[in-house]
Length: 527
Ligand SMILES: NC(=O)c1ccc[n+]([C@@H]2O[C@H](COP(=O)([O-])OP(=O)(O)OC[C@H]3O[C@@H](n4cnc5c(N)ncnc54)[C@H](O)[C@@H]3O)[C@@H](O)[C@H]2O)c1
Ligand SMILES: O=C(O)CC[C@@H](O)C(=O)O
Image (cartoon, rainbow, N blue to C red; front, side, top):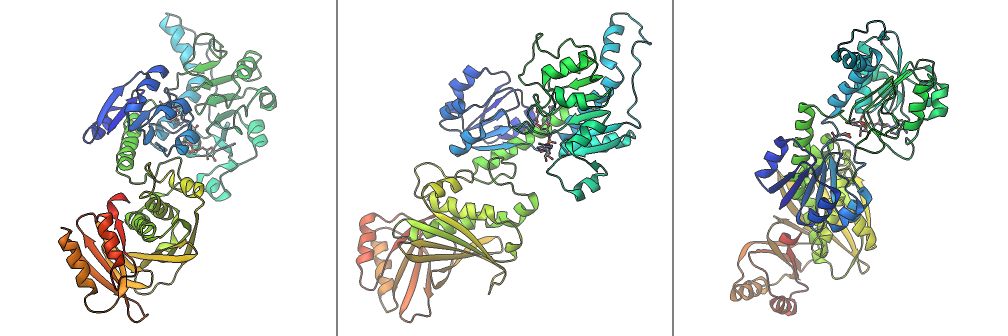
């Protein structure tokens, strides 16, 4: 497998990846070169400089995962990646402190004229009267977007004795209370604050959220900070508002289009402090984000789910801890059902019993679907594309949770509707080992690995022996055997774990044997 690390990713994560994969490092890569070389790679790591467009994704023949060494994924075409089953991961917390501290640094630099004072002093000037600043103490800071960075900025601002008022339509009263901030409306924040800082992603809702109309409503002497995304504050309006004295100052780290040249409207405006997207640029943050995405890439390339995938339903680390031991079992139950089916699966119901019902089992259901589709699809099915592929194929997937469970702590039952008939396979964990404990109505204890031959048959002398001899005569070794019975007298289910594939002609002979009702091969290597 080959990994491309673009945009100057810290070597810490790259070292980790190099233990398992071939890694090419290209700190500076043009859009043309990326398009040209992307077909070679299985994984791509980027910061904010490279644009992973639909065209790049279209040409990425082998790409399985894109790792964004940072928070914002606005430089990646997520719908295009999802449609192609490419996992997109980021590092949600790796650079939070760096961006939070940069915001504080920008606020202080702006309010105490540090950049201009330094610049003029470096030229030999001594301008003490010209650069009188303002204090943070006692001022109101308006925080728009109370996520990781917004909350970190609020906490630090309170240590500077600022009052914090926040606007974030997606946080609840309880969270606001625990952060010690006052929650207000957008109007409250823009009209009552002395400093305003924005910390949300650029979305259709947030784009241009602060323009001239809003700036005119703000307090006289207001100062604005944007260390989130360019475009949340309209750049031309901000330049004009500072020039006209509507806004006293601004500190900006991010721009609608980067890199920024000398013609940018904010360049050269007195009172505006600019940095070239340095929010995440600390040694610690770069190591953190590099390790985060490298670990994610390692897991994803092994087929494991990654909690930081942005194009999958998010799974908290607590939930992941509970469900991860069941993921392989869930896939194998799905794969078993589809291998036993005599026709296309129309409907799947995944029933969870026991303690596992207390957490979100969505990812386990996706694992069942992944296991069902993998043996029958040409291209790899993964946690990202499995739900979409099932929908495309008209397979209705539902989840049922039932607290009660007999005999086991937890039980997963996969029921499939095939040509009007129901098939079901049940599984549980014995310690950390997955086991199939029931196939249709037959109780079994099968270790779902290698290949199994499943034969419902009449319970009478000689039937099992005939199959054993046939397999032996064809050089197929049986390494384990189970016979499951039902309440229906006279019928049994034989499950043989075998070391080799069974040729189609031998399968036909088995199916035609006296006393055998059916024969199905489940190959766990393809699930
Ligand atoms: N300058 C940098 O180098 C740098 C570094 C890290 C992060 N960032 C950017 O900072 C931003 C925030 O990062 P984070 O880690 O705190 O993200 P986060 O996801 O933890 O927080 C974002 C917050 O914005 C809120 N939000 C969404 N839409 C909103 C709206 N319309 N109005 C108000 N609030 C809204 C969300 O509810 C959430 O609480 C992101 O855009 C990220 O890309 C920049
Ligand atoms: O890669 C960077 O330096 C910027 C990262 C930052 O914008 C982010 O969204 O995490």
